[in-house]
Length: 291
Image (tube, rainbow, N blue to C red):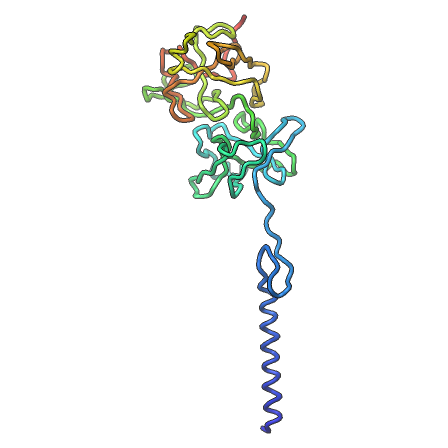
């Protein structure tokens, strides 16, 4: 082979290598930014950050950054997720990817848990948050009230519902009528999942338990709250704010509301075994006191 032909083949080979190298580099763009070879950036995922959105029916609600509604589950009152398997397909766990608080939300009210399946889930005031598969469009709130246990997440509930087995301070299981036995009971909690009780001797919107000097308030503390928002399975007009021992106490159906001091954790219901019905929990079926 003569020298001129050999040089020509070598030049062609070098040209082909350079072209292939350039093609390879052009396909290796950097996600989220302009790569060094002039390719357009790869579009980054839309932020899933928590947001506050105004809904015509529910007022201010929690959504993701795209306006998709978020929900809380009554079974989750203890701060862990009770929704897995098929439930988690219908009610998909929401994870923001961070704990950035939108304007109007206290940063410490947002946190993250690790679910039993190892995945992360965003939590608001201790309530794990979910999407509802029946919400097809931005602004849909079709899951609220489902099964009496799913409620659209709001920043300003006065009360919420738990849906669990009652366990007294004696370690025994109780039913909604304060008798020993097993069975799930749906009952009132505060917005952070702490159980609320009534004092059986109280009168209509009248606290007869708390002493003026608050010396017994440590055992059965007054639940202090304004009338804000309530889950959709009950009516807001069932709640009234009264003054008791200088504190602003919330009442439900005329029953002044209390905590039980030894309920150290959200979801605890130790007070149900105290005094054989003296301190009942409250449900949608609680009989109203009359004036």
